[in-house]
Amino acid sequence: MASGQLSRSEALACLGCKHACHMMLYSATKSQLFGRIPIRHIVLMQMRFDGLLGFPGGFVNLQKETLETGLSRELWEELGVAIPISVEDHVVSCLAPALFSSTSSSCLITHLYVKRMEEEQILEVERAAASTAKDHGHEVLGMIRVPLYTIKGEGGLASFLSHSFIGNARSQLVESLLRFKLVTPDELKIPGSK
Ligand code: APR
Ligand code: MG
Ligand code: MG
Image (cartoon, rainbow, N blue to C red; front, side, top):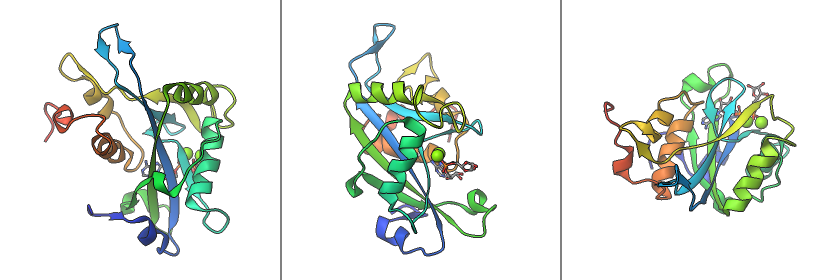
């Protein structure tokens, strides 16, 4: 397991830590950009209130809810859709670097869940998030799709990854794209980066 990563049970044993759960929702798609570049998968992220990119989700209070019911509540607030979540959707937990928990006396553990949906379900999430979701226009400025293709050198995925992300959302994204084979390692070799 990579450094800082914890299993779900190890993470739950960290008494006194704050916990935040987020989810990557995605679907396959046959649609094409400009009618010729395969989009392959729709992967949802969001523009947050703080101007950073992140996944939908948030803080979970383990004294009142489980990781999964807390995540489901957060998704309802931020997306306006009831999404069933099970322990099997959990992918990785991570002890956040001190930088991200320095404002609090307790440490922060982030949990990432990933769920594959049908394209029509993803479209429904986008519609609800932009209309009925309680947090729309407040904590969530808008849902966005991650471009997985590369055009004109660094356009597409590389440009997307050059934006600013909350916490370890960027590495959660990159690792999940590889883990679920949504991109190949070669497609992540970004010109000019180490
Ligand atoms: N990776 C690592 N850390 C993350 C990630 C991520 N992908 N996403 C968020 N975090 C951390 C951030 O430090 C964030 O503040 O988890 C914390 C909780 O996640 P949010 O989605 O921001 O929490 P949420 O419960 O939805 O609401 C944000 O926190 O800053 C306050 O007042 C603000 O009401 C707001 C609330
Ligand atoms: Mg929230
Ligand atoms: Mg949130």
